[in-house]
Structure formats: structure tokens, C-alpha cells
Image (tube, rainbow, N blue to C red):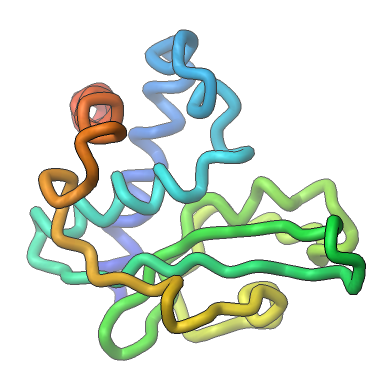
Length: 152
């Protein structure tokens, strides 16, 4: 687990450095990192981990406040032995509903925050790298990935 934590922290630091350098200014999603880009970030981190010999699953969860229109989604990774890898949880730091979760890199077993999100089986998929993603998002994510790895 320490290796995963080290790699996840290294990748998060590279994302922060790329953002601070203005690399994401023209990307409508990533310019607001970590807000609203947990899905893309999970795909990018999955590629990095795969290149380092760690296979992961993409997880997409939904929080429902009881009213149909009041939902919040969140995405993260987990390993085959159910270790969660989340480098965008701190996007919820100002929201008391989500416990003001302020952990920029979380690697561990399911915690109270992640339990808040309902995960259906259909919302879990094995990661096979950026090449396996649809052609609509592939060029953008590959471009972001190249920018990020330049800061590793």
C-alpha cells in the first residue's frame, strides 16, 4: 500500500504543479482541479499506475440526499483487494454534507466519506489504460496526461 500511496502522491503533486504552471488554463474541466474532474483524474491516475505495474478499477458512486434532483457523484479507483485510491476527495472540503473531506490523497480501506456514495456494479470497470477509452475523450486525456507526466 505504501508504493501506491507514494505513486498517487507523486501524481497528485504533478497535477498541482501543471495546474500552477497554467497547463490547464484552456481545459474547461481541469482548470478547476480538483473540483468536477474526479472521473478524468481517475482515468489519468489509472494510466500512471498501470505504467507502474498496478492494475485498478474505476469506481463511480452517487450520493442521494433523498430528493431526486439532489445528487452528487464522485469517482475514484480501487485495487483488486479493495484499497481505495482517491486524489480528488478534497474537492469536498467546503461542503459540510460531505464531512468537509479534505484529503488530497487517500489510499486505504473504505472510509466514512466513500461509504456515502452508492456504487452499483455497473459503475465499476477494470482500467486498461487511456488507449481503451472512447475516441471522443482519448485525445484530450492523452494531452492532459502528457502535460502531467512532464512534472513528475
